[in-house]
Length: 40
Length: 550
Image 1: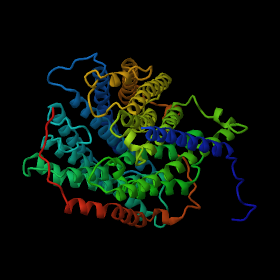
Image 2 (image 1 turned 90 degrees about the vertical axis):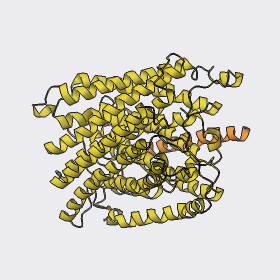
Image 3 (image 1 turned 90 degrees about the horizontal axis):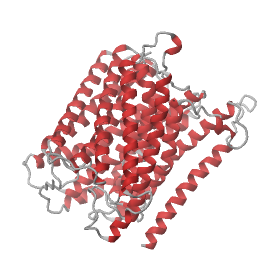
Image 4 (image 1 turned 45 degrees about the horizontal axis):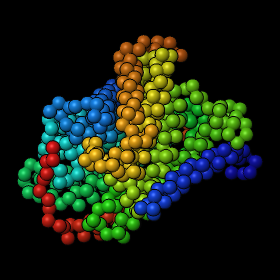
């Protein structure tokens, strides 16, 4: 498809930040239980 | 509107689903009160009977019948009305599944099958319980083949075309389900049934559990994929936008065929008899299954952002406020998705080899599946129910019902938040699962678990009670929309099946070449299971006789 015909890309900055937040929740929960495992 | 006969088929499936839901949630309420010492059961009924009925009726029966009701409606809508053969086999599948359900439930009620829904050997139920479960699986296979037949007719008439997204996703789920069931069918037919009827004296416990979890993990995806279908196909339509990416949606679904099955060992990480290498390999494969789930999360956020911006949302998160929060069809599914964030994160913890030792046999796991199947899946199904039943019955989804729907979703969320948070914390402290309440002879360490604000018995009982009230509101909505709400006569009152447009113009055709995905799935299964399974069979320990602990 030529450059002129392409639809403008949607603005997905909020999506990018949102998925980073999801990633952060996963990492924080994982580390919390990992520390518990190490402590035991 | 789909054909009357197809509507009837779907409605019967959904009706049975909610009958199971009613009994199953009542069993849940009873458990909470028994654990709280607020209720003494009569002599003919015990805790484990109720626990088994709760698991079987909600996790297996409610989900299965609802899923087929949803599939039948969506397949008839997206591919056209069913032919007579498809209809006939769908009915045969329905009745066989129902017969199996009645048989298994009767055995639980009779006190002959208090073995919980995972029916771990060497706990031994009546042989008829296992026959009932086998019939449930066979029934779903018949219903599945009926839908595959319908799809094949469509493909024949539309050569070279990609099928509509809903149909594609239905077939993906069915392929995964049929492959997954091979494990449970093998163990039930060749191990449990001969053993339970006394034709063999002992059972190989490790093999039975391994074959069960070959099925047990993809079972989770059998629940989850129909919910994902709603997220991918229904939600964009409610928001007034197209599916974010047709290729992404299809790719994420076929990845589930590949990675949801060769991962069962992550449920068996604490078991001896499987070497660490094979456990580790399957843990790695389990982490692969996170990929399509995160693709789904990305796709959902993108759908929300595009819709919100279209409605005038500005800035980084302005779109969030522009979503249709007053539309119960959307709000219910959004909350379901939100619950899946900690639910999914918990799943990653469970599957992480060493971390599993912290949580394995604890109430954490119970909390985990209440915020995975119990909310993201169940609440998505609730969100679908609100419009699916009126769509099928041609009745109105009245303002009063919409309000009640909102109350139902909010109460379910609050109840689940209280109950599952308490279960997660109690699990981390060490409280066991699969047992009735135990204070270990009032040992101070065990007593301390229940001192917290969130972990005391009262909070759990309040949470459980709110959930039950919510379930009864839902049953009321189901009965009203199925039988009593006024008929929608005017065009504006007709409830629609929201199915979003999906741009297939740039979707590669190989995504719908099933032989690629089935072939790769078989290969991965062979890599992950062939050697450990053959070791298990060749070096089998002495079998175990059956135990009836109740």
